[in-house]
Image (cartoon, rainbow, N blue to C red; front, side, top):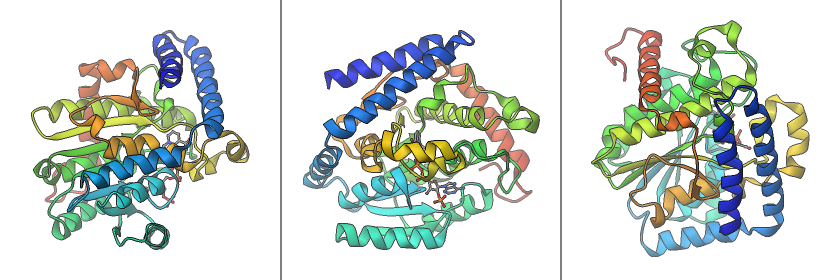
Length: 350
Ligand SMILES: NC(=O)c1ccc[n+]([C@@H]2O[C@H](COP(=O)([O-])OP(=O)(O)OC[C@H]3O[C@@H](n4cnc5c(N)ncnc54)[C@H](OP(=O)(O)O)[C@@H]3O)[C@@H](O)[C@H]2O)c1
């Protein structure tokens, strides 16, 4: 506990301090990431994450936390999402895996049923890179389910070459931020009716690398950088969380974001070197899902909202997470982007 607090402060306070100090962010960011990777490497041997997950699930089961409740996890067919879905399903939630690939999604549902010995898992197809798919998902969900107590915005793409979503938005921003923004807003009425409810946004340590959210990187293909576009999207996840938490004040819905650690998953498919190193250096998906599972299930975060978590503890987020003006600018920009790229349908913006 103390060591984690110390490591988090050392890494995140330092990076945050230098974010707006030009190239110094590179030194502190690289140093911070290195400490984070070393910490993860050591924790592979020292921390029994499976036991921690089991304890959280047992507590939730004992309290009947998941009884009669429904959860949605995006990108749950692999990696962190799969492990998060497993724990939430084990805790008794009816758990919907929102996946873009029906075959992979179906296989994951079958594996989860077999591994947990429960029937608590369902597949619903969702492609976050398509507004039509998001709108269809939200409509279908509301037809099939009366409530939604947990939404885990987990799916992500990392450092892909320049490509666009179905509607023509830069892919990393379009999937990681805009897709989840639209999904959340489409589901917000049912989530609010289901309170107490939680919305969890998976961000990354990469959220610290850009000094500010950069619109040009989204609007102008020439400004595209694989790494900085990912950082832009992950910073947006943290800013969206803070802006959403403000809008949810006075309701029974909380929202928080998190960095899961460095985890060996398919996310590194676009960068060969990392893919080769990841099994050696990075933690496994169960360890990587711990903070998501904690935020989804633990009573310790009842009523906690708008915060940024690392290793199950709140820590210093990017300064833009404290700037209402910057968050509102991002919110407006995202709404305008959705409106501009939406077909002229009766849906309107949302
Ligand atoms: N691994 C790390 O070290 C790390 C560090 C920081 C943050 N994160 C974040 O953690 C989250 C989970 O990633 P992971 O590491 O578990 O990687 P992963 O195993 O590759 O999982 C990513 C999931 O997102 C899904 N996805 C991608 N594009 C989608 C779309 N358009 N619509 C719906 N689903 C889509 C993928 O589906 P397919 O299987 O069909 O591709 C996959 O299920 C991501 O948000 C990532 O940015 C990871």
